[in-house]
Image (cartoon, rainbow over all chains, first blue to last red):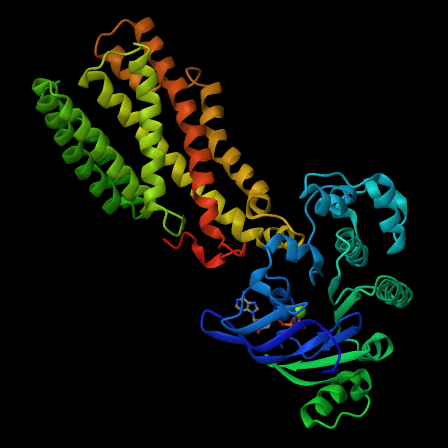
Amino acid sequence: MLSLEAAIQFKNVSYSVNGDTILTDITGSFPKGKITTLVGPSGAGKSTLFKLCNGLKSPDSGEILINGKKIDDYDPVTLRRFVGIALQQATMLSGTVKKNISIPMILQGKQLPEERAKELLTVVGLDESFLSRNIKDLSGGQRQKLSIARTLVNKPEILLLDEITSSLDRVSQQDIEELIVKINKEFSTTIIWITHNLQQALDIGDYTWVMMEGEVVETGESSLLEAPTNERVRNFVRGEVE
Amino acid sequence: MSYLTLAITLIFVVIPLVLSKTLKLGLEKDTLIATVRSIIQLLAVGYVLQFVFDAEQLIYIFLMVLLMIAAATQNARKKGASIKGITWKLIVTFVFVEVLTQGILLGLGITPATAQYIIPISGMVVGNSMVLSILFLNRFTSEMTTHQDQTELILTLGGTPKQAIRTQLLNSIKASTIPTIESQKTIGLVQLPGMMSGQIIAGADPVQAVMFQLLILFLLLTTAVVTSIMLGYLSYPTLFNERMQFLSDHLEEDDED
Ligand SMILES: Nc1ncnc2c1ncn2[C@@H]1O[C@H](COP(=O)(O)OP(=O)(O)OP(=O)(O)O)[C@@H](O)[C@H]1O
Ligand SMILES: [Mg+2]
């Protein structure tokens, strides 16, 4: 894993909020063009780690490199357009689906062409008729799909997915997995995927990071989740499977 | 009116005191404090105004206005929600509103440049600007707190801080100015405005009093809208750093009572 070129590299990164340490001495990298899953118990700091990756937060100490360049050397807007996050909550603005999927373009003073909007919706498994629907009438799963589609508008080079299939049924979940794998293959997009579903991590991930209590406990090929050597990881895996 | 008649009007203070006591409303202490404070403050203002009017010196007018702005700043800062480093932003807003309104009034010769006009009008303008600031800050901090996820979403998708707070800012500006606009729609139908009533009682021609009241109303429209917009655009940058990160700890929500 170390020999691969890193899309994102952490060097002794720590982060705290109001004196509470949330991430402790994170070191490791997410290989370019690969799918890495990020697993760990609730509250481990996974979502927080994502917010550091696109500069929504800055670490207290340590260094983050994106494509080998220090994160602070990027203009924040540019950085956030090529490091895209589909947020865990699938936050939406009030209004229509069309408005929400268009946000990334509107922010650049442009319009999202209707054709492109329809195409993106279809790709995540929502049909075109959704375009004029009001956000408040969408189910949790439909919001997640829309959130993924919206994150794709900026065509990010690095795609951070925060539990994007947690509210989806089995079939939709598989469709989204296939879509992400396809994006990864077609555009060599680097994917980092937070999931509570270890089977999903095994199925789609090339690599995995296991996080607990703000620390990275283990990193390596996904298969490490099948027979963990680290005791804490073993306990975690056993707990998740039960 | 003599001091004796004024003393008799204290009956209007006794009524709520008795009612509060009987019904155990617990309003006695605040009622008494309010009464004593209003007597002292207003009489003091009356004597100060008398002095300023007699002195006929511009410097005293200037000092009076400065005092009003200082008091308004102090009050707006203390009351309700706030944003880190708000003090000088409030001062800039009050000064701007005052200069703008007096500039138009005096510049176009609408009112004469005497203490008798400048001071009461400034009082109304600065006082109103203060109320609007409190309304705006309360609304804006609560909008920003409840819609923090939306601010974060816009930033995540590559938006600037200005884009990320736009909806919350516009909602707050609208919400804080609507009461001023709405109250002007029904004015005169139910309640005669205080200033106009005062003038009529003091023996002024009712039509003259109305015209003057209209001037004040129009002035307060400008005051309301300019205060909210200015304070909004001055204060939102404080909520972000140069890395375009949202600093939620710069919001200071109302923690009084
Ligand atoms: N703004 C904040 N202020 C205070 N604490 C925070 C803040 N953001 C996150 N935390 C804390 O940091 C820890 C990590 O949170 P985070 O959301 O990153 O966990 P997570 O691994 O994504 O969990 P989950 O699987 O439940 O989504 C939690 O204990 C959380 O309470
Ligand atoms: Mg999370």
